[in-house]
Length: 77
Image 1: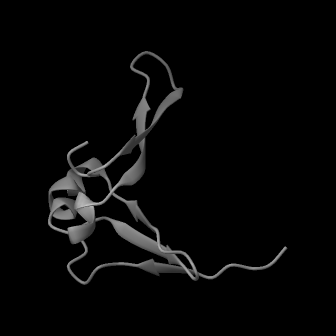
Image 2: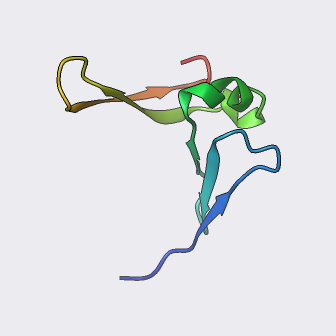
Image 3: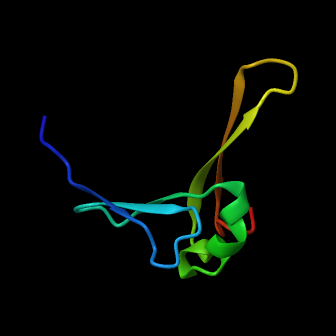
């Protein structure tokens, strides 16, 4: 298996989110906590198509929920 190089970028005005890029891939991964969504909205990539993962805790147990979705405009979702 060939190794991959990942670049993790912490924006200079970092407000809690991370950008991860992989060599030879045009996509980007954004790790954005809910409290940082307003700051993510300011990035041009917020208007791009996206696959997203929403994580949440189950109210009455310790299990965690995961929702996977896809959208044409990532922030509006």
